Length: 97
Image 1 (cartoon, rainbow, N blue to C red):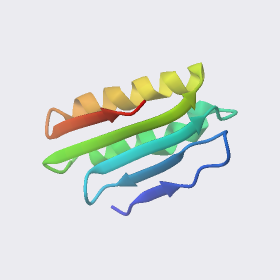
Image 2: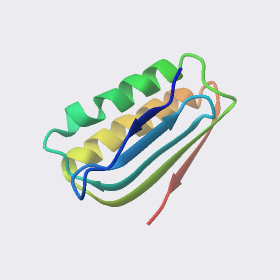
Image 3: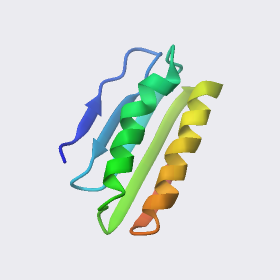
C-alpha cells in the first residue's frame, strides 16, 4: 500500500502522512475543515484497510495546534480504528501539546 500524504492548507486543514510500509502515521497543524467527515474519510478508509494486515508495530502521532469539535469526533473514530489495530499489532499513540 502506498503512503498517503495531504499537505496542510494554512490554518484550516492539517498535514497528514500515513506511511503504511513503516506503520507510522501523523496528523499535524490546525484542523477546522468545512466538512471534517469528508476531509478525514480517506484517513479512516486507509486505517480500515491497514488493520487487515498491520505491521508488528504501529505509531500514530497527533501534533495538533488547534482542532474544532467536528475534528474531535473524527479523532475519536481514528482512535477507535487504532483500538482494532491493537488486536493484531503493538500500537503507540503520541500526543503532542
